Length: 389
Ligand SMILES: *Cc1c(COP(=O)(O)O)cnc(C)c1O
Image (cartoon, rainbow, N blue to C red; front, top):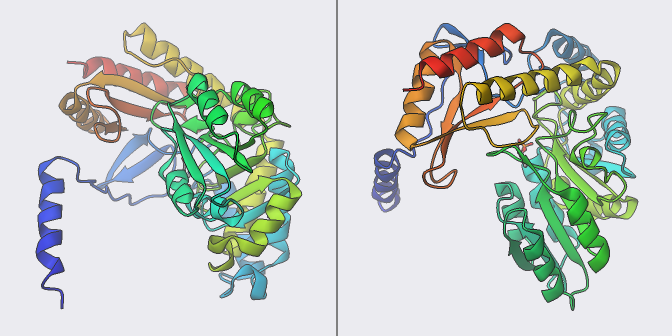
């Protein structure tokens, strides 16, 4: 029965290999952390979304073990049948409070949150205005609903305004953006977006996956960083990055929005409850972050230090303050070779090239964590300088 599909897939796979697009998965034989073991070799890790160093940390493991013992491993149910434990409600409450929203609802991932969001209440009477570089999960989420789409040029407020004018006849307009864009570490102009949304009466939805837990004075996210805490209507985000790194996602927002999602959101209704151990440890992580502001301070110090040192060494690093630091190389092969050489020097970083980023804009994306120390950062800068040519 497989005879018709097999040659098609073989040919597709061959094309992927030949065009250099194959995604190799390196196998770790250690926990996630500052240092990881790859092929029996210990290397400094500079490519995880482990911004606060919580993934793999002993504190999280201890919290997880305690939660496992109390709540068990799995629930074998969706939330509305028999899959809601007190820990799920506690995490929702704490998450909402942390990002300063009325309420929050859990999903198995942020991907699943975004897929289940738009179609739950937007229809062909409405319009969605989406940044051209938004995450794949937002793009797919928008596809799941019948609202009109307007894709505005990346962070282009004139284009967004044009879209808001064009869609003025619609019942509801919804502007959606990543809070932080993962390829450049650039931060959405939420102040300007909220001003426009106010002027044209539009909803503002921010996917804050690369920000929740550490952006803004208290780590609430990009909306705190940009000074628009009360203006953003909805935050979608993940616990799979700064907040433990294990997985799980959420949507936080106005009371009625969260209520309608509980009634209608298909990826919430028809998918299993978040494993209690994941929910309990995410809750612990938020409390831990609140009690240890030093984690955030160290992340900013590390990020500033690394950005400065790389600029001093003559590398091209786009302006931002985010711990995603793209070191622009340009040529795809050069970037790939350089990442290979850095790995040999004991530094794990990843090169990104076309089609993930625009052609001729290949880069090595370095991600800083509060788990790193000065010696680690100096070592990376030194290795970059050594392998420059
Ligand atoms: C990582 C990421 C996601 C996916 O989060 P998961 O919880 O792993 O599904 C969604 N949106 C953005 C912007 C991300 O960076």
